[in-house]
Image (cartoon, rainbow over all chains, first blue to last red; front, side, top):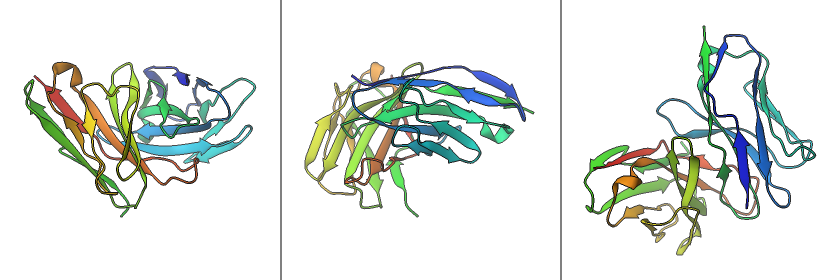
Length: 111
Length: 114
């Protein structure tokens, strides 16, 4: 079946640091890949997505590239802010319509 | 404003007392789904619905029921709640026909079963 593995954290960084959150997946076929963000006390919001190999999703300074050869979709940001503190979920959608989520990565940005 | 609305946001109740968590979306989405979020486990799908009167089990359906009598509503029913159903629940919806459409999530319902 499908699965998503991501670093669980917490990941603690200083403001303006470079961020990488690793995500790898196992799936049959060609899944669509997503990053969702959950701010404290809120639901999940789509951050970015990629639907085919070598696609790059980007939003709010975050980027992730769909790497089929390494089955990865790592999330990066060049300079994080305190407001980026949240839980980040990597997810995929394969043949069925449901999403398979990773366990989430808690990101803490210190001023 | 496009949104997915869940009620209640918080509920503390006791074992065995039937409860329903409502979910409503105003985007005319065909697909709706329920997830539970638990520490160290991420989100897991409970049930989903491709359209009115069509529902299917997700990964963790035991102890839950759903119904889809109208397109906008997708209630989650716990007939006899147990403490292991204490969790944070999310409803989501999206348009079908394009598998790249993202899901829109509600703000969550935190259930505590004593």
